[in-house]
Length: 210
Image 1: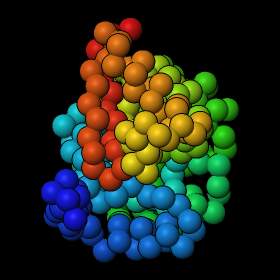
Image 2: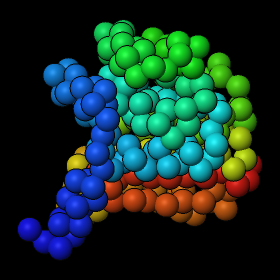
Image 3: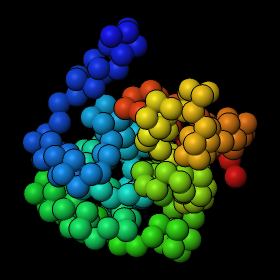
Image 4: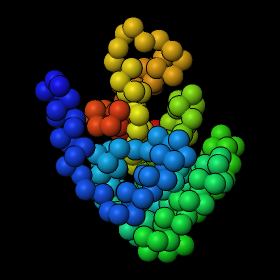
């Protein structure tokens, strides 16, 4: 194991997830959903806490793993979470309720994010999590940057896409889309950009201009 792999493993093993999050992760594995890793979840909680987030959008509910982490950082926030799979959202809802999160703190919308996001109010959210349909990541990030207020952040897990983005030999469509996204954002004066290697990459984009 290389030193970088050891660092990665250490940062993941450092995080101790609550039992309800462990169960949500197990549910995710059963349904074949690639939930955020513990280290990425912890970073999301830190982002939510640092922003004192009150209004969050989550694109990709899954079984509630990322939502539980977001609530851990911002327990008084309201999360609007979008997913095309009703079954996933039913599992996530049960996890939120079991975690003691009041039902009025989360709004689960079943549908295609590409249909829902255009109807949401711009400059109205503190944090947007983009964790669905990697083939649509560029479109979803564009919507996310429209939805967050100035100073708000768009977070994108899996931004190194299974360790393939950094490998120049990998050229499939998803890898190319992530590379395009990273390249274009790095040139923009309207955002601050950071890419963490936690999990398989966590891209953090903070809006500082229009």
